[in-house]
Image 1: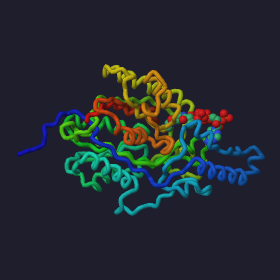
Image 2: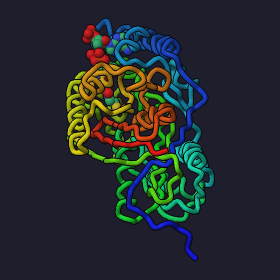
Image 3: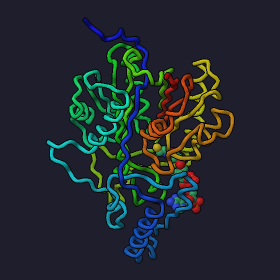
Image 4: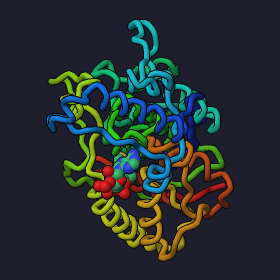
Length: 380
Ligand code: COA
């Protein structure tokens, strides 16, 4: 006899998982090493600077970073080389092909936690999406490596939509459930953002941190009693060069070469701020309207964690008043910007206290531009 309940085609989030690297860099540590790097650079280039051939670099400041971004610290996979003024980049040893790769390894830790929290047997999982803003190699897919490490019989593939990767992954997984093509899908976002951050660039060296998250999207029929009904998912992209990284398989980057700075993260932060806030706020309000929901009734917003000021403005436009920490929690202070994982960390750490029937919204935005919303309702 087959005991599997009939599938409903209604997607839910059954559970989430989080891996946080043990090492963390405070703003004070970051700025001290950056300023040493600057002093060295200016001393090494004294003559060229005096001749007007090279621009002198300026010191960074703890006060600026906290005021401009809300970030106080960030977790990283490889602290010492980032803080070494002679290196200013993470150094993760190459691993032989018969060892699990580092992105898959941290993805597996987050995924196992999500599976455990859902009480889910891997035999019931159909697919793994590895959704992140950078992949450590072209192929085989990290998703398939994670699939193998977990012992899942199904399929997996990598997808990259920069900071919006996780919400795009959730919609993709939800669509598999809606179409009846899968009943249980893991969306894993290992974000080793320290590898694509230019730690020598004063304008952005403070932004990113490393982490891995996992979201288990399932058909309501097999979900645990405690879950989050997915009320709607909505994605949007609008081309912009304002956040860009030119690294790719047709070129090679040397992170220590100024000529290669465009092979790392670069952005026009002010323009991003000005253009993305209204785009995202409007998208959320429109989606709420489609759901015949007053956005002010959303119990909690789990927003992308890029900048505290952006989140304050978006939340205000959506809720109609300045949001407090309970309405729009931030993890920026300790995690920094963790690209696509940010809104999932906020959700993971700040959702257990909501009551059955409460509605909320997970939202991401970033390079592309790209933005994604996932409206959810707690079922307990
Ligand atoms: N320390 C001290 N001063 C700094 C500094 C640092 N680390 N970085 C920049 N400054 C200076 C600038 O040189 C500038 O000086 P000036 O006024 O003399 O020209 C001044 O501080 C303001 O710099 P600006 O870059 O305009 O700051 P900002 O207020 O726009 O804040 C960001 C910068 C990046 C925090 C902000 O623009 C932002 O968060 N934008 C959105 C970013 C985002 O979400 N990106 C998505 C990535 S996924």
